[in-house]
Amino acid sequence: MSEKLIIAIDGPAGSGKSTTAKLLAKKLGYLYIDTGAMYRAVTLFAIKNNILNDENKIIELASELDIELKLEDGITKVFVNGKDVSDEIRSLEVNQNVSPVSKIEGVRKILVEKQKQIGKNGGVVMEGRDITTVVFPNADVKVFLTASIDERARRRALEFAQKGQDVDIEKVKQNILERDRIDSSRSVSPLTKSPDAIEVDTSNLTIEEQVDLILTESKKIADKKGIKLEIN
Image 1 (spheres, rainbow, N blue to C red):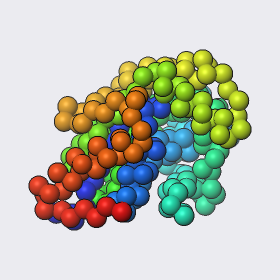
Image 2: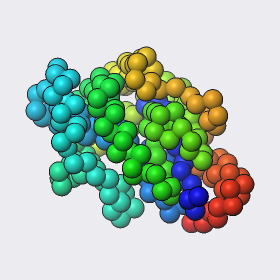
Image 3: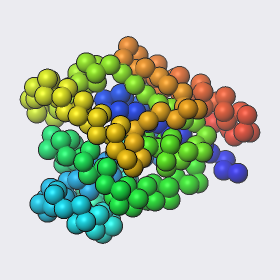
C-alpha cells in the first residue's frame, strides 16, 4: 500500500481545478499534475505543424512528443522536447482547439498511459476531465468541481487580462460552453462526475475554502487508510 494518497480532481473549464489543485499539492508536499496541460501541448504543436485537420498525424505527434511536467520554484512548468511552453499553451488559439484534439481516441490513450505512470505511486494531486473516471478510477480522494458559467467566464477572462490579452467576455463564455459540449459528449472518456466523487460548487467559494474542504475530506480518508498527512 502506498504511504501517500492519489487525489483526483475533475471539472469543466474555469471551475477552479488548476488553482485549487496547485495549492492543495503545495500544502501536502505532493506533485501537482495538470493533465489538461498535456493535451494543450499536443494541440500547440498540432497548430505549429498545421495538422489540426489530420487525426492520424496528431496521434503520431502525441506519441513522439516528450512532454514533461516539472516543479520549479513552486510552479509546475510544462516542457516539450526540453523547451518551456508553459505560456504558449495558454493562448486563445490553443483554448479554441484543445477540445477537438482531446477527444481523439489515440491521443487520449497515449496521454492517459503517461498520466497513470506519473501518478501510480501516490503523492499526487492530478486534475483534468477524466481523472476520477478513467485515469485513476480507484483514486483515494475524488473531487468534482463546478461553478456557474458566468463565474467561469469571468475567471477565464481575468486570466487573459493578467497576461495582457484583452478578450471579449461573451466570446470567452461561448468558447467555454462549446468546450463543455465537446468534452461532455465525446465518445472517449467524456467529462462526467464519478458517482463516488465529492461535488463542490466553487461559484461563491474562495480558493482557501475550496482547498480546506478537500483537505478535510483527504484527512478523513487518510486516517481510515492509516496514512499520515503532513499539511504545510
